[in-house]
Each structure stands twice: as C-alpha cells, then as structure tokens.
Image (cartoon, rainbow, N blue to C red; front, side):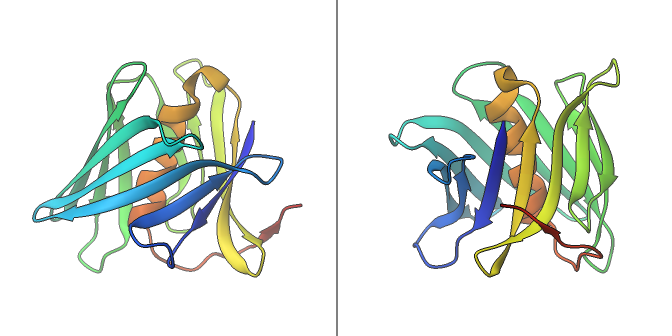
Amino acid sequence: MRFTISPCTSQGDTVFLIYDEAGEVRYRVTRSKKPAGSVLLLTDSQGTAAAKIKQRVFPPIIRYGISPAEGKNLSVTLRISGNGIPQQLVLGGVTWHFRGDLVARNFDVIDVDSSVLLSHQKCWKDRMDCFAVEIRQPAFEVPLLCVCLCVDLTTEGDINAVVAIN
C-alpha cells in the first residue's frame, strides 16, 4: 500500500494529512500541545481514532508512545544532537528495526528476519514537500504510519535528492 504524508499548516490543529494511492484523505493527524510534549491523534476518514501518539521531550531524547486502537503499543525513541539534528532512532515493543537517514527522511523499517515492512522517502507533490510511504505489511498499517509521523514531526533538514511521485 502506498501513501503520501503531507504536512498541513493551514487547518488548525491538523499537522498532517495522509493520502491513499487514489489521492483521497485516508487519515488526518491532529496535535494538542502539552507542557512536556504533545499528543497526536491519528483519525481515519470517518473521524474514528486509529491511534494516539504521546510525545515526551527530555533533551537530548524525544520519546513517542504509540497506542493503536487495535494491536499492541510500541515506542519510538529519538536521540537528538546538541544542534538539533536527529542521530539515532530506536523502536521498542516490536521486533522492528530502523535503517536509513533520519535527516533526509529516507528510511526503511525492517523486521527481525530482514524483510522490509515500510519504505519512506521525501518527495515533491502539488508544489510542496511531502513523504512517500510504501507499506508492505497491511496488517501493520497504523503502527507503521505512526513511526513515520514521529520521524516527520521531529526531523528538520534538507534532502539531497527529491523523488517525483504521480
């Protein structure tokens, strides 16, 4: 399954819209800021909560707790350098591992058997930066999208290569 994650700056608390291959909004991501971090809510096109992501910031660590509506909880821990550049990502509560470049947002999530569960890369669509995501295990669609959101929410930086998608 292919998705496009598009940052959203003009719709109130909405921070991302996630589009399916047909160009329809599949998920909406809203954020409410709290003193020690944020809470993100991933809702489907019907407005039903698909997952909650709790962000906690403890410099130089940013930790995300992901609670899908269905399935088990997992965590994403990002270590950030002194100049704000992400250095390391660790996934907890799952057998998955991160492989790739956090700054360029070009990465894969792989399982313990080295099979690729998700591929993520920066792209250009409708005159704006966005993120192309391919999920190869539909059963893990929501938690894998949540991992992407944690990286995309945290990471800042330029990309070396832009990939066009149709």
